[in-house]
Image 1 (tube, rainbow, N blue to C red):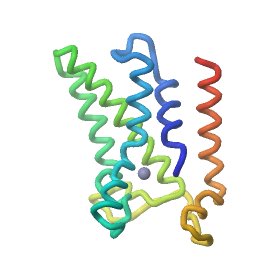
Image 2 (cartoon, rainbow, N blue to C red; image 1 turned 45 degrees about the vertical axis):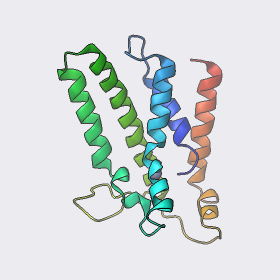
Image 3 (cartoon, rainbow, N blue to C red; image 1 turned 60 degrees about the horizontal axis):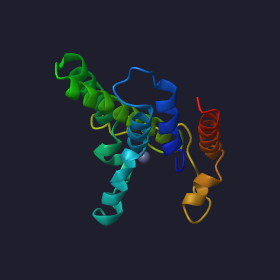
Image 4 (cartoon, rainbow, N blue to C red; image 1 turned 135 degrees about the vertical axis):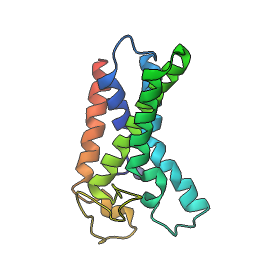
Length: 164
Ligand SMILES: [Zn+2]
């Protein structure tokens, strides 16, 4: 997935948002969109430090156990903590982590995700994109799975236009 992370985070927050949340709709959208982009922040490490030696989906930042664990951790803080301010932050943490987890689901459509890392060293992908074109990213843009990215954008734009 390339271009649909931000709109996926937007859709997530818009669809889940309820009045009475400890964050405003605007705050929820910011948290969710940043969370949906967050796993790919590891590209900085990939390009600047690792010199593209390791597939960045192998980094712990793309491990589902991390994002699912964060959801559980923030949820536990939200449920068990008495401090109202901390509970509101934990709520934002749940939303952020859920958007990060959504990123991995979308990544797994046409790219390898090590769903059981670090316990099982095996990647899973719904579709395999064959390397036919150069540069490499053209393979993804010309693959039918890219239609899903366009569909997510159209969905997000429709939600935005309806203002609901
Ligand atoms: Zn990713």
